[in-house]
Image (cartoon, rainbow, N blue to C red):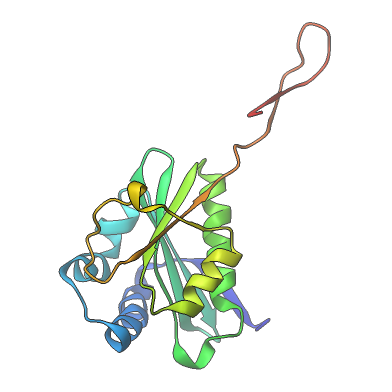
Length: 176
């Protein structure tokens, strides 16, 4: 796996982003209108509103992807997570999620949210291992996807910033 790099989306990745997601969605479910809006137009649906897409690439071939979709001030949805079948169970999904979490922290996010389906047990276990927790039913909002029946979030730690020294010469910490 050391030859797999995770990098941000480039315009030439659009077909791979579509195909990676089409494969897993159609394997378990069906492409819904909300999928097509995002997959056909990643620039306008994800990137232009402030989101990010990460691609896992091996030898110049995209083998995985993951998106951060801006859903509100300081909040992003972790979405469109896919790894090609031959590359699954090699830590690529974990690396994609770690890159998304790191970028969300850098962007000042306070919360990551995701939706999935209970039949995707491997994905759910991965999300749990990466710090996502199940939302109680009272906090679940209607989804754009009929397949969504598991809702999770990852609360981000506020950044600790060293502020200039106070009048007594001691540095102050912000975010605590």
